[in-house]
Length: 158
Image 1: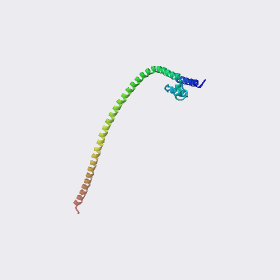
Image 2: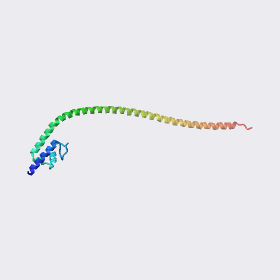
Image 3: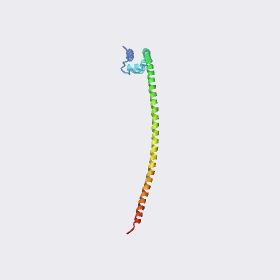
Image 4: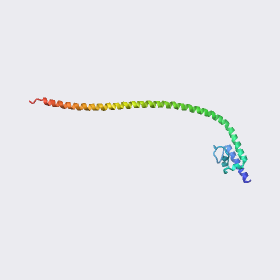
């Protein structure tokens, strides 16, 4: 067996392993291509192009895979439509929830501003009343002093 026949056998074996789903050197999920067959056969880039029968075999294998996957695509389309409907329903649910939460946040912000305004006005009133209280306490002290002075003056010495 010469080198050309050995290479052809290696390429055919690599193509067979890939189509059966048990490759040794490439990923199982990798798309079938001439380059994938070359890598599976552990040959250099472009080696397959010296063997037109390998190129034709790869094209035929791709057609077979495409026919087998056609029914998968039909089921996948139905599943996709169901998934899209489900995602749309969930999206609408979250949009509604988001809207409700935004309304709640706006309401809470309004209440916060009202309470903050009440707090500020109460603090102003408190400070005014404290000043007034201080003035009245000073006045009371002054009046007590005046009363004491008047009492002392009204005392008659015997």
